[in-house]
Length: 343
View 1 (cartoon, helix red, strand yellow):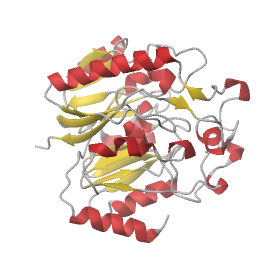
View 2 (tube, rainbow, N blue to C red; view 1 turned 45 degrees about the vertical axis):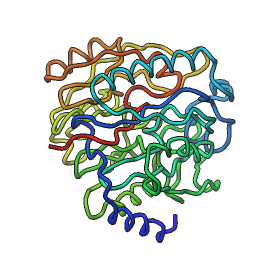
View 3 (tube, rainbow, N blue to C red; view 1 turned 180 degrees about the vertical axis):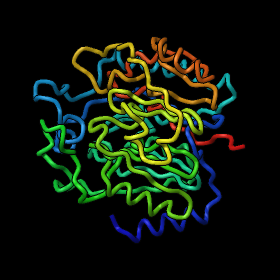
View 4 (tube, rainbow, N blue to C red; view 1 turned 90 degrees about the horizontal axis):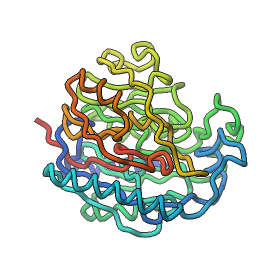
């Protein structure tokens, strides 16, 4: 990536008056909620094989093309219920265009990052997804949303990772990351190194936020998933983790997060997926959206997780998201918080 481009983005942001959310838990005021229309499985190329399907055999890769109409319709029904809940709570909701996408318009969290003074489209590692940010551009004022590009040359991908979970599908040749590899905690960011985010991407974040925030790496934990299937930041000093990935948060998480109180999430109720289409872990009980430090939106079948959260003073609003495993996103993934109230 051109260093001069990063320098210009930093300069533009410092001159701006934007103020985006700075953590995952303050009272939510404005949010983007995705739509399922036109969601599709892109044609298989090097990026899809190394990033999405390195652990799949050829027979396990879903067919390319638009998802079945039943999936689209039912996913949109559940998204509309989420929108209604948010609006009843006084939260401003922004929706993307219902237009064709290379991948989908469902998960703004994957492709956009809004934090403090800066909002940008991520240098996503999937070639098919590189322009999907355009359907969300209407959520921002002209010139507000910056674009962080990457290169989709073959050198970005390591085909040796196919069938080998000890290798990652991305090299360090160019910076690339999905924004859902990042969790925000005021002046600290936690960044997962995985098939959807390389260390070079974290280096770009460090440069972008060198004056305001520190970036901490989480490594050797989860090759195939985004961070929001492994960790949830619930409030300052409290997090929830997938115990099959993080069995000892004090040993596995970087400081300062290893000193936080930790809920080891109960094993989830597996809600299943549409036959032939699976793009998400069963651990959707980690993929929660915080409305404030005492309230989250949680998938409606996860009663044991609801009980675990209640012990820590957190109320769960139980909502449906029937195709979160099919499409690859539950409540955290299908939203992007733009504004939270910072007391």
